[in-house]
Length: 131
Image 1 (cartoon, helix red, strand yellow):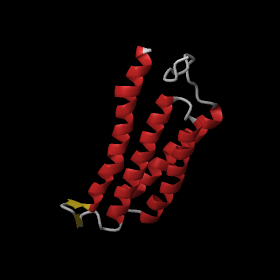
Image 2 (image 1 turned 90 degrees about the vertical axis):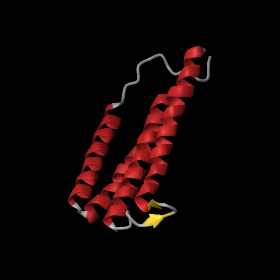
Image 3 (image 1 turned 135 degrees about the horizontal axis):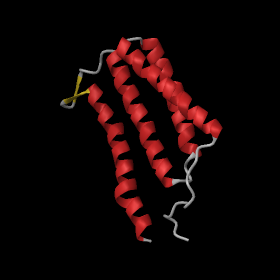
Image 4 (image 1 turned 180 degrees about the vertical axis):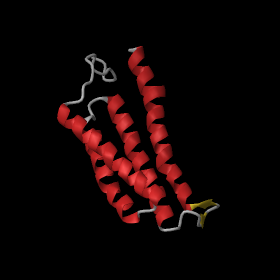
């Protein structure tokens, strides 16, 4: 059997996992709403459940490469987004660093997410279809 080939059966999310994913969205929305409203305590507090649930979801779906790659990309997106929020909350976002600004460092995890998905779509997915 091809090591790149994923299961032919449809992926379905167990009910208890779906509830966790839905709660994850609630935490993420509260985090971003707090960011928009400038509520530092709530915004920062919501990073933790949002990120922790994202990591749990990623670990639970690691057997399926498509889910692993997408969930890893979401996790680094949350990291980038959270860093950017914190940089604005504590007013170091516009401070210069090596010709950029500190908030621009969020480009690193955002780019990692793009690289992960690029790998999945441009390399892994093509290999699995060739075999």
